[in-house]
Length: 264
Image 1 (cartoon, rainbow, N blue to C red):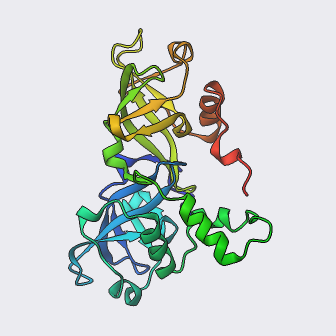
Image 2 (cartoon, one colour; image 1 turned 120 degrees about the horizontal axis):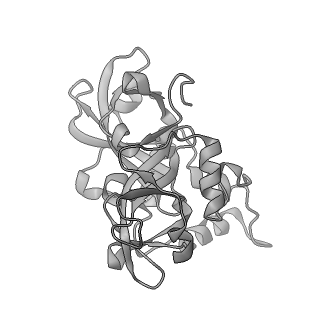
Image 3 (cartoon, rainbow, N blue to C red; image 1 turned 180 degrees about the vertical axis):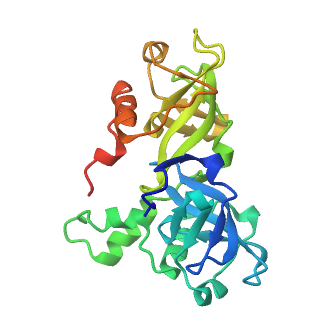
């Protein structure tokens, strides 16, 4: 939950490096990265370092977003995990990023959280005559992917954006995070000299972007004529993000706002 005195939306750049404190407000570490689920823009997990106070040195830890409560005016996050649990937690090397979904499932289980993708799977009916073990095996087979499910937000930023026709349109400048929902509310794109859109930034729904790993790019699934008529904003005058404003952005690009999607 987000403190009501704090903003609901912040950029990834404003979140990275924030300190992490325990319930007694003792400084125990900081946020190193936010790992984004490419399928739906969720924060799959936060990468934390705990420094010397927990005897963890320079090791990194994957933490479910639900275990963190933002206190933005304090530039901090309260971590709702006991010191005893953290002391026994498994760390990982930065070269292991990103974790696989199976590895992340183990992380969620260890900290007592149900993986967010399983909350959906648990509500979906299995095949007729299928046992629970067979259903789980089927879900694992169908979830095998050639490319990673998650990427660090700071590596997504700066990636080029291409059209369906393969044209180089611009790049991703920033990701705006919905703190309460724990996901990318929208991405901020620049389009260079494309049409007369140079010099402006544009808010784009995450659903409109698809990772193209072989091209080191993101495909933008929005027609060119729609982009040419889109309302941008000045680089030095970003809009104040509200649900009402964001709803108009999603509506213009013909995407359903994520907070209005039915929960399975």
